[in-house]
Length: 487
Image 1 (cartoon, rainbow, N blue to C red):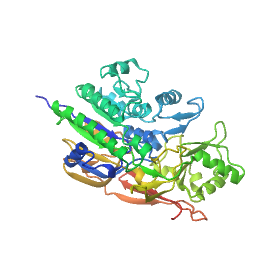
Image 2: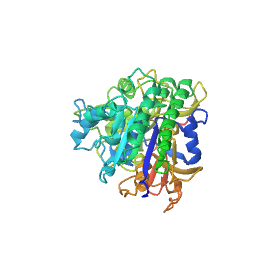
Image 3: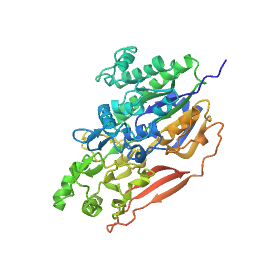
Image 4: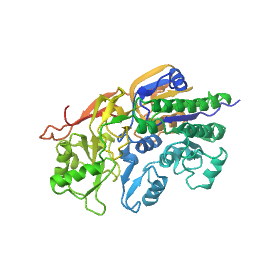
């Protein structure tokens, strides 16, 4: 009998901090951890937002190469108002139309598989846009409980599973529906080389209820039940020797200590400074205002100094080399292993963070730049609580009962999968093959280094954030950015 071709299963638990996983709440996941290799120093890319990291997972690159630089971006000409909300797949399609098919500016895993006649399939409870980023150019095996993407083929695919749960249904119902898409549609399709099951929990419950709450505990149990359903489906079909599995999250979470958006903060800046350069915001990013000429570094300097004087400011990153030379400003390019496109904003502001616990004793707090007053926990900052994610690899090709302390990250997923499937890893990919996780590695990982990036010019008021990076070969991982102001 011919050996079965290797396949890969990715199970994503959105926003799951590594310290949330316990054997009591997640027995199925804990069992897999014991059988596989736990990646204990696993990192998100910055900004630590979902669709930014989804693009990195799908492409193996940082935002400096793939071009999705925030959940909500400004790109003139792509939509009527120039705003791209990546939660909306129609905005991603609009960006593809405006950019000649470069919403993500490099080929994704689904593209590389399609060149070999293979498929990537997605089952998700995430926003329609987040799921779409995995397979937007090959949207033929895509089940999302929130959308059929206006495609007849995808309505037909959902019909095989029955009507998806509506918006009022429990999160558990949504998770189970997505898990059934894997067991009932994807496992028996040999053309599907990679299956992605992306669960919107515990992220949704964390946002609504906060770290340490009973609602989040219940969300983790529901995630584990969905995972157990898929594992049972694999076992019943005798496919255990066929699948290598990655169990991952895209980012962590921090408790929210403030509810003021960057746009609102700039109204105070305008009142205090009397005038501002002609700028606009999206997420924690500052852009030239629509239709205006980009302000120079000199013109931005008073605004940057004002931001740095605010107690909520943790770090300011400059999108160009000139802006990055302003006092107390860090280079955005250092976060992204370089910038290879024109979508970088003028500035990104990362809010201040601390180890302070919330009322339930869970550490990690951030002065979030958000207008959502009901938000209890969030992510997106350069805090280590946001930037550290969960990851375990288990299957025939991985070491059993191991823990790797070498730095790794979401950008490593695509090169790992390509290697496991016997496909070439393109030279432009930022991530690396995690040889240290394999039973029979054919190479050794480079010796890791820790490097620190500081502003080119120290600010007179002492504002001096420090960017802490892990370097493994040519791959960099953002560990954290210390607050610019001590204390």
